[in-house]
Length: 322
Image (tube, rainbow, N blue to C red):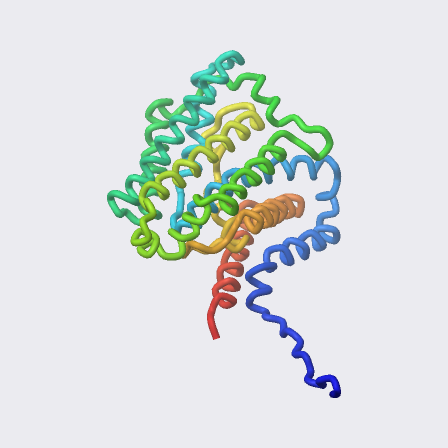
């Protein structure tokens, strides 16, 4: 009996799946190659160390934003949490190193309250996440401005600068970012909580009918997002060394941009931390290149906006069914 001569079909390349899975990594690789030609100073040891520190600061905020987006939410209050954290550390410690643990505890407690307020409005009052978190952002900013009477004072303890020390390219913020990614990735991919998050984001009503405590899960995610923003605020305050009302400028939108560029969708249930990490690197490298090229802030915002639009458009096209 002669062997069969039936040809084995070769798998065809699915461009949609390729874009959805690897688009951000290809984009990051292309950007890094362009940097060799346009801004070779990016690869100097000093610049790389600073870029990685700043990447870690944004990346910690982006972890929380990714979690919120996975449940089809949005958090615009993270910038206010960072600013509140900076003011709290300066006012509670007043430059006293021994008071730092108390300042950390108060900062994280206030961040948890902000997260609970966001979660309460979204789950119990059914306020759209955009409106709810924007309202809390304005409320928190107003509360801090009233408390400081428009002048964010206080002294940042010198000991807080330790959190930004580095050995070569490795710094405490970078190691903390990687550690938090590993911890949250374990929760997302190896525990029932992670499966519940994806289930709620994919179909909230089906998750509710399946017996999941959807409201409790959402509130927990918003609290986690706010507390991650507070951790980033602690690092950022130590990095800057003083309190400024513009200390958190751009962090909220950049964190959203990083998650979306990394493949996490606004509709929920799709995305992950690895893509967000690549998105954070892409956003930070792009910002650094713009600075090295001498572009003004307006040009940087235009470039970021175009990158986000291109990513959303590309992922939307790739997600469409035949």
